[in-house]
Length: 324
Image: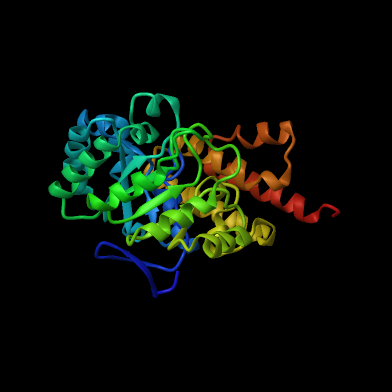
C-alpha cells in the first residue's frame, strides 16, 4: 500500500488499496495481517454477535480481542436486531482499539437475517436510524455500515437505506450489490453502487463479483466507488490485494505465504486448533494443484506443523516439475 490517502472514514485516513470484507470464520487476525502485507488498505473483523460480547462467550474472547498493530485501520463489525445490545456491545469492544464500528446490515444467513439482524434490518429502516443515532451518540469513533440492495428483487430499498445511514451520522458505506434473497448467487448489480455513490457525500465501497484484477479496475471505472472490497475471492487468491491474479503467483510465493500464515495462527491458537483452522486456507490456495483424494487425506492427516509444511512443499514441487 502506498502512503497516499484515498479517502477518509471520519478523521481516519485510508490509503490506496483494496478493502478486506468481514468474513465469518475467515478474517481472523492472522489472515488479516497477511492481506495487509499483500497491500490491503483496510480490514474488518469477522462479524461479531453483540450477544456473544454481552455474555463474555469464549468465542468472543478468542476471536475478537486479538488485533495486531499492523492491522490498523480496522473496523469491528457488530450484528444484532436490538439497538441497545449493539451499543452495549460497543462499550465493551471499544477497549480493544477499533478505529471504527461497522453495523452489519448485509448478512443473508437465515439464522441472522430471519431474526431481524444483518440483512433483516433492511426491512426496518426506522431501527437502522435508531442504531445510528444511538451509536453516534455513544462513541467518538466513526460508525459505518455494510448493506445489501434489499431483501429481494421486489424490495430494493438501497437508496433509501443509504441516504438514511448518511443522514443519521454514518461515516462510510460498503455495498454488496446483491439482495438478501440472492445470497452469493447471480450477478452483482454494479449500477446500483454507482447510484448510491452519486447520491451520497460519504465514502462508498463496492463489493460483489470481483475476482480478478480486471474486475477490480472495471468496478472502479463503472461505479466511481472510493474503494473495492474483496470477500470470498481472497481465499483462493490473497495476492489479489497486490493486484496480481492467481496464475501469476509462483510456487515459492505460495509456500512462503502459507508458512507465514501458519506461524501467525500458531501465535494465536493452540497448535491443534491452528492446524485445523489452517486447513481451509490450504485447501483454497492449493486448489490449482488439483489434488486427488489420497493427496488431500495425506496432507490433512498431519498433526505437526513441520510435517504439514513439508508435504505442502512436496506438492508444490511436484506440480512445478510435472509436464505442462
